[in-house]
Amino acid sequence: MIIDFHTHVFPDKIAASAIETLSGKSHTTPFTDGTLNGLLNSMKSFGVDVSIILPVATKPSQVIKINDNAARINENFFAKGIISFAAIHPDFDDFRAELSRVKNLGFKGIKIHPVYQDTNLDDKKFLRIFDRAVELDLIVVTHAGLDIGFPNVIRCTPKMSRHVVEEIGAFKFVLAHRGGWKCWDEVATELSDVNVYVDTAFSIGLIPAKDDTYSADELKMLDVESFMKLYKIFGSEKILFGSDSPWDFQGTSIDFIKNFPIDDVDKNKILGFNAAKLLNQSSIM
Image (spheres, one colour):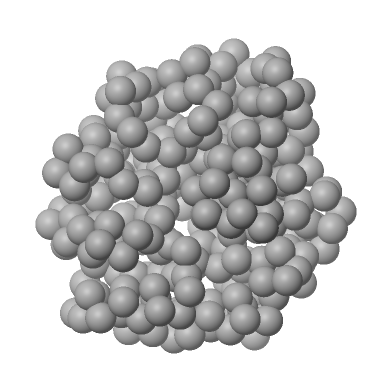
């Protein structure tokens, strides 16, 4: 069982332009065309059983439309292994009602992106959203660390993540990009005793650069040795496999975990069992 806990798609009408814009901004090469069919084809090619789509609302006005579209995806593609989360924005006025609607529509969780939403993770606007998510038993996935498209802008440090848990208490909280993209030393010091999940999205190997913008050192993400250091901190129980498709290759990401020097039981936890348990999807465990 392989569950990719971190993927993105765009509506067919805007996928090409969205991919072009984001690829240009990040100077990276996408691995699919950013469409739902592109993701399904990738899943079929590499034996991915379930992919979680994580939509992002960059403006409050987008929230309802994004969530309506995500609900249609779940209705039409759940049987094909697609589960979309919902989006929320920290400046969305009636967030309590929208999160209730999200829960009633059957969503398992929500995605936030502090950088795109120009709000620090531990700001009170997010904390009130987390409180409501806890009440509704929703998973919260956040972008964590730097964002490749926004150099030197950081809205979700490991210290902020720690502060959130101190304020809210333990909840179903997933920190993307191995706890904090390009902040991995701080992840080790700030989050070693904090009850959170981390995913592996866009954190392994080298940045898939499309040009020579990045230096050889800047291209480096986590290799086996540095990944092992973080594995020893979090163990196999709190790590979720994620590719960040279309921005990283599902096949390469899966191979990294399969070849990681741990036993098969722990590999299987990372590749799917932990996610199935978190999603409370007994049918896919």
